[in-house]
Length: 136
Image (cartoon, rainbow, N blue to C red; front, side, top):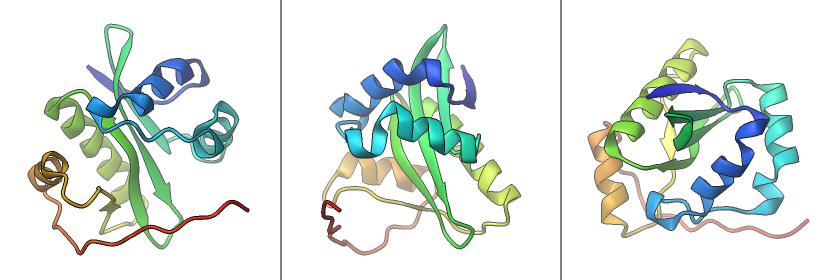
């Protein structure tokens, strides 16, 4: 397995990861995850979307949201604990090199599988929050 930067030609496989609810995908939104949005994201920050690849197939992805003040892991869809660890470790390496000493990740309340994933990766569980959004 290799962990590398996302490339535009990965888009179809990346979208499939986002749509696969068994990978904690099921989180695709064209307004946020369209190919043009991802292209702009990597043009601005080439390390902002990482993928894990095995034998030419994407097996996981994580996006880094870094505004200089706070860092988040986003769209963290993986096929296994091994892939999660590899992507996590690379993402942390990138964020630490930028001066971050803390990283955040969202997970749905009550999802024991994801709670376990993030606890195994060394995250501390925070409080439950509700996210609000609207079209603009």
